[in-house]
Length: 264
Ligand SMILES: NC(=O)CCC(=O)C(=O)O
Image (cartoon, rainbow, N blue to C red; front, side, top):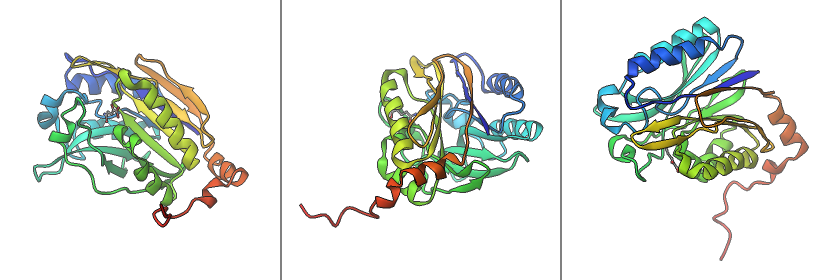
């Protein structure tokens, strides 16, 4: 299975409509790919907090509509990264979406850990309250978003739910690139899953995004890592490697359901 991680820049002067049109051209060049993955909030620009309210979208807004059209035309799954989602009740969420090759939404996940360090996300957005999992040709899949990487309890839970591949859209600054590398590798290794982590690049409101999108296999091996410019990282993965890795080294079978029974 061929996966493509598309690193996108969201420069300050570019409108959302211009960016969506530009990214559509890039995606249309990806014929023959089975799964396309985009970064967190690329169409609004993660650090463009002043635009969140005006660029918030529903599930049939401009970002979803473009990606759904591309999914159908390329007959590929498209994980569109995430959008600022409005569901009409006044709340905004950072919602990631996976589209089928028919262009249908088959999975969505609203970021649970909204970020508050040098970020207004936690003031402007409401955290999600669900962790759905979907069966796909790539195995059992879910998404977590950027800052969620730092919370092992969330990853333990998705692991308990039988997940085999996790898609991580991100807008992770270059300043903490080594944390990004360490956490994406560790999450794949400790749960014996594929991690497809797609980061944003370029400058946004004075913040430099880190790029270095990565595909990490269930043994923690980095199959590919991008640089820090706009780039498409194309990698072949074998979904059966999850089962093979777990059979060969069955560490998950030794994991206890909880550890709070251990005495001091
Ligand atoms: N977009 C984010 O969630 C940024 C997270 C981050 O920069 C960090 O955890 O460090």
